[in-house]
Image 1 (cartoon, rainbow, N blue to C red):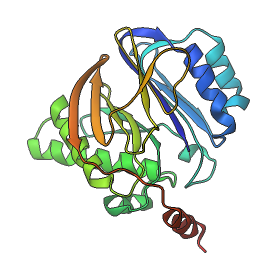
Image 2: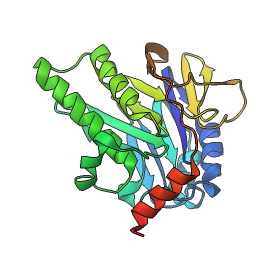
Image 3: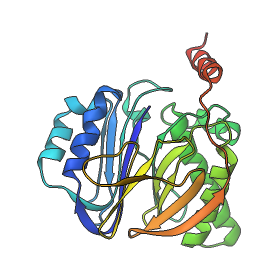
Image 4: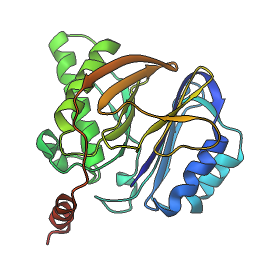
Length: 257
């Protein structure tokens, strides 16, 4: 499966050791990598449709000191979509209030429901990109309804409703950042952990480096700001259970067989 790594805190924390270990898992996730650093002055988004452990860019990143208070990183094991930049995480989108949303997803959408229309307008062909497009549209609709930019609790409510709606029968491990809040969600057991650091948290698909890691709360959307848990969402209980028949059917559908 893909892997996620995220940071949310009050202060900049060194992440070189964690990134070095994270990107070393590229042999199991060879279909691309990406990293978004959200610090105001020195933020950047870099990604490539190649193995992270064979990338000069990755080698340069982890060789130079890197500290951040907000970050999302991803290494990809493709289930849907070819190895190309348009299918590489993290994905970004800008809503009508000019807020930039960034999403990385570890999972697969088997029952697409409201995501299906975005198949025809997305840049790539991943279900992950469709999730972000749907989020952006829902945020825009609520913004239009209220006639103003949404407050943090209102944005959280929109995302909580979305996660509750699309999580049944789908694997939905997410890290999302809206420029203020870091949204965290898992509905697949033992596949997302957090480690407390001074003034914040690291999040990762697997425990990284030294320190005590704990499982992220299950089947419930969480939102962090400046290293503190600010909002907790609905306990929807929609646990993803692997189903070989569903996986095989999805692959057949996308292969055109």
